[in-house]
Image 1 (cartoon, rainbow, N blue to C red):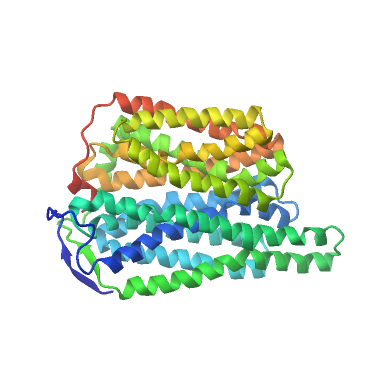
Image 2: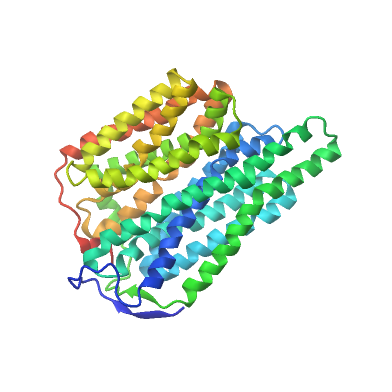
Length: 440
């Protein structure tokens, strides 16, 4: 693993985005933001797909995909930060990218076994890689280039994520759901032998995009491994986990931020996962049509409003924007539950605009004043992604016992919690964390 000369923590005072020789490392790292967007949004529609492929699989059972996926995010966030602390960000990025690649390739034996559990294992390994990758890539981008342009550089890298989200949705719509729907008529009168062959064909359709992504990721891994990357000089590689945790749990603003992040991620994943349930139920269209005509526009709206909200923060306090968006999200969710039809479908799309700023804003508000505890504190805020693992199956269970409209009470509660944190954060007087605490 080849790395260039150390980059110190001190800024040079320059306003350039990147220094000479740093363009390729930045592009390779920024591409990682797109790749985890691909995985997240290619996976969401599979909750619906697997209920059709595996006979007798309930919505709750199929939603365990999200439990495995976001449970891995929870379990690997702190190990990811420890890798960064002890071995450097490049080692962390390569570890995360390697596990992501392995998870993609595990879809092949899972399809051969024709069992649901091996797919859960593949999703867990894949998402374990994403967790380590995300924990390392975000701060690593801050170190590549002058300190004075670090925030602008990270925002540029984050702009690749919605692009990956759109690509992932298109892959799911064109290469998975649309092809599976073409096979649905064959399942009705199939004999047992024909049904077995049909399942094999369906699983081949599901795994093909993941195998393709895995091959591309392998190439990206090799490029990052061979590229001379900047690294950060660590004056102290010790983790001091116990002492840091004690300080964090005594910080009410931080603790409430972790709770809010848990519920926000739960809202995001439930809203997007069950779009292919709600829209067909309300409008009588197919899942692939729902992805193309409603979910894809929702993702585009999500990306656009990320920039709109960021611009608005130059005039309005972040906690106020978070509060307004959470209230708007709750209002749109009420419309989804009570009105339905085309109005409900449009309201469901509009929720994505409200969610666009929530994750980074909660992250930023919760990190205020953490100082040297920022890195472990950031891992805790990433671990709050567990909300997607817990609340998505809960909504799936509500669909099983009631209906998809009523099930949206889950994200409604989530937005109420986020709004409550926004109000609380506005009353807490904490200094911004110093820049040197964000990046070692």
